[in-house]
Image 1 (tube, helix red, strand yellow):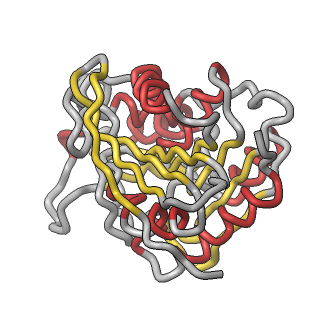
Image 2 (cartoon, rainbow, N blue to C red; image 1 turned 180 degrees about the vertical axis):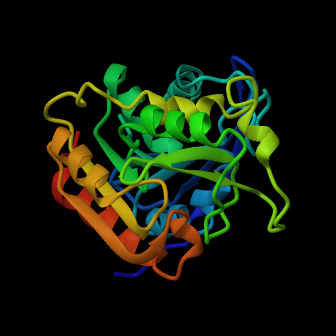
Length: 278
């Protein structure tokens, strides 16, 4: 199949917290296969999808749109005090004018995508390395009680701040933007008052109601992901009636791995096979 060059357009939409930066990739190919709406994770932006996913899929006949949530990337607003519901409102605004899009979310964006699908028309939901851990409140509580100033640093450097808890062994992990070994103990004391709130919402408030019956769901995990576990991946897939998939030897930030192309090919195959035409 001959690939076509995708056009790129950047818009700024008037959101509740200020202008939202929105990037759209599409080709002139008709008929268009589907509209895809991408939602990034905590402390990321539309760059996550632009690096590989959107040009690759747009060249194959999809219209791809990604927003930077309020306070992220080139969008206005502040991350502090932003809630998951606020981010769902951002996605709903950007989805206007799209042809009942397929929502694709990474990390916290996968949680936003699930909450969006509860109340808005959606052709399908793809969760990429974005399974909300179960039991996180209990696990994190143990750490803060026993070791209020302690944390463990991950082996992989991720470009985000956030505290997550592994329900398998109750470890708390503090991700840091910088690569130094300076302690970040002070952040553990301000979890509820700083910009961790939206990220913690994802951890503490997992989706308990399955997405509406009939909406196809894809659950794709990364083997070297400190945020999700195989158990969480399987449980979430089962709850949504989806088949889970793991990309071996990939980390949470799939786009910076050598296997991003496998992830996007998996998404396209799922869309082509399971997502019905409107």
